[in-house]
Amino acid sequence: MVEKTEHTGLWPSLYDPFRAMGARIADWLSPATEASGGTDSYDITMELPGVSEDDIDLSVEDGVVTIRGEKKTETEKKGDTWYFSERQYGAFRRSFRLPADADGAKASASMKDGVLHVSVPKLAPEATNKAQRIKIAKG
Image 1 (cartoon, rainbow, N blue to C red):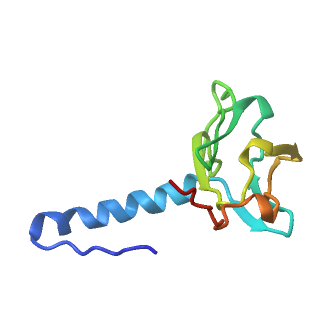
Image 2: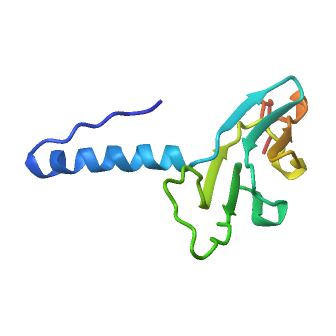
């Protein structure tokens, strides 16, 4: 559940537009991502055109998949006049909390045509944390 908090007083409300603008900028700079789950795995697909596999760091720690990377700028030609640029460059970082039945230790990834695919298999149903009866020894 996401809990919404409201500020009272003058000072916190003055910062709200800047806080919202920062969130919008972060969303704009983040690579487009999809997350889905099938019967056997959880899958994350991220669009990373122009980013090399060598510039991506993918890790799973404490049930969180983290994808870090950087799209490096191309060298500008001296003497060129730039009228506008809509291309995005720079570092990015996205983290995704895995469900309890995900086996992060067996995660795998591949990249093709600028699209990163991360697959995290699901644990077998008997391997998840189910309630079990515990026999109490006497004495």
